[in-house]
Length: 129
Image (tube, rainbow, N blue to C red):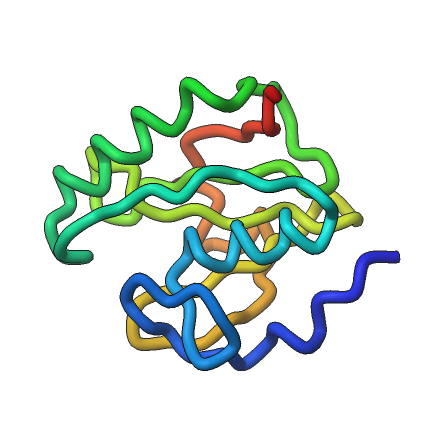
């Protein structure tokens, strides 16, 4: 079983990549690193520029394989402010929940079928390399 509990409660920090603070992609990088998978860094400017983050997500998708349904440790991409895809999390081992962090919040686990998330899911991806 994968241990992620020490990540819960870490605060949001723009461009954060450690336990002092993370953004959603930094959290994804940390979880994959713990699994022995190194994924590339993607630089972005302002986290409120939705079109820029959307472009970054679109570029990053080329490195991932789209899958039809959630599986353990795949990435889940969301459109929090349609039409932009600007949020990412990691599906956990039960394939029903995911770990993520939102701006001005801390790391939490949420259910994929929760009212707040189920209609915002834009796809599931696994690392293709």
